[in-house]
Length: 124
Image (cartoon, rainbow, N blue to C red; front, side):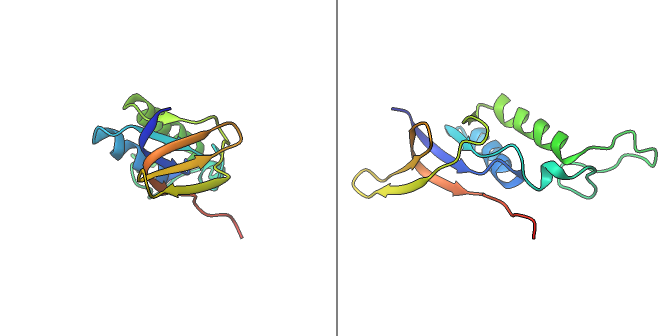
């Protein structure tokens, strides 16, 4: 069994940013989460970290989905691992003897030294 340094629950902006920083620090990172969410539904980003409008012609416009794709690609290129899209943890347990966390999904159980919960928000 693989023991990850970090398992990130959530594949939105916070989870992907954590994946980038974790992999850049040389850690073995797994991201579990959906490829949908509030940002994916945003047709046009303005004033968002990592992106700004270059000119008034809107030829550099970016949607939320495109930003997520680019950021996932960046995390993956740095070595982050991704579970299947939509794969969610149904339970999270800490084993005090081994100082490990166990996340159980529909397919398997993942083990890690730490967990970041970045599950995002839902529309009201």
